[in-house]
Figure 1 (tube, rainbow, N blue to C red):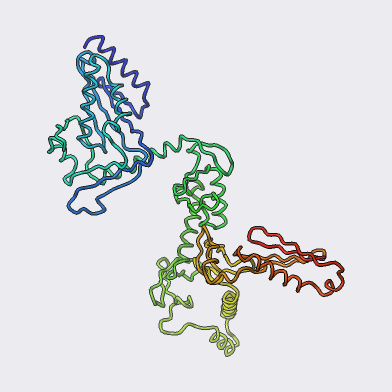
Figure 2 (cartoon, rainbow, N blue to C red):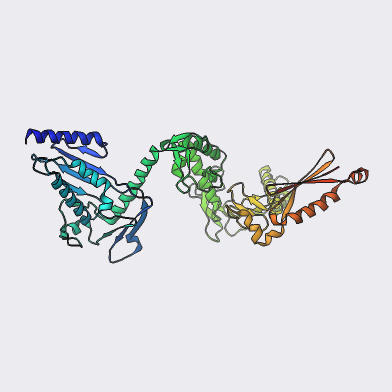
Length: 500
């Protein structure tokens, strides 16, 4: 090797080391050479699909997805003694998503670039071409489709000598994929990792603390694309979990229904609170299952799956067999002991145990509670928790599962437009209800809540008659001035003031 070639090779390798990062360029120590790998910059919403031409032709053999990054093109090269004066670099070009025929076209163009720059270093022009012009040169546009044969890629490369358009395949062109599932997994994993790197390096404005932070310090809700800093979300999630509101770990953006994933919750709140979150989430899910009951033993309380029409439950932890109705030890065909039988037993036996009497009292109180709930509440259609209505309109929100529902028909209401139900159903006849009534300094205040704005004038007439009728008799007689009525309309509420 001449001294000029040796110096040119060393200078070129040093230049590549300074231009590209360690992830993009790696220099080999054994011989002059190295490896360059780089990802192409794809257009927005770039769709890639893989159709596996197998005999089954099932949907499981096909893959389609929108990606932001594709696996890199890898250029391995070795500089011979005669480079750059007389001999071009020895190289191989490999890629997981380009076909051998496409890689062959790229290899031919690299040879053409060498011929145009014979006697000069060409590694940098090669890399620039592959990095910036590959998509245009191969006419790759979205959607981009990769067709694979059924025998596998390696056997295809070895058996085929020419591609479809008659171009002889280059041995330096390598598509290093063994199977379609491996290719699909690699593309998905690579795209996800690169998206995370890109997100971590960008600044984002948190709409809670209004501070700009890098993506590495933020959490991204994938469904809605909203971003908040980890510090604010950590405080928000910790409060919700401590209060038992595990179904409220959603995006803080108003009216947004995106929910944080368990992995995001775990990264933010730590192991201890995540264990509580996981337990409460499981508990709430079990509570919604009609065929799940709990072991009656206070020291156990393990969920037990109830057999259809079965009367016995067996705890999988403590092996306790119990009646699913009375929660006592399983008594076979014998009927459950009802409160009346317990009372009769206590009357006949003056020396009845005090413990049995306490059980009787507890059971009676439970029956009273159930009767009160039956008369004064309605079950949430989502989680079946009893809900009491104190005042307000008939659009209800469950305090446990946060489900919207109609108080009249118990239908579940949509989250985005829950009040549309009262315009399109039989419940629209119940327009409003009185929320409160107050007397302050001789003035009577009535606050009404209503659902349908189109019936405002009817509502005004009803309230006017009602307020005049409700005015105390002594004020009707003693006042010498006409009664004044002031109407204020704010956010689905009407405030009527009646006074002197």
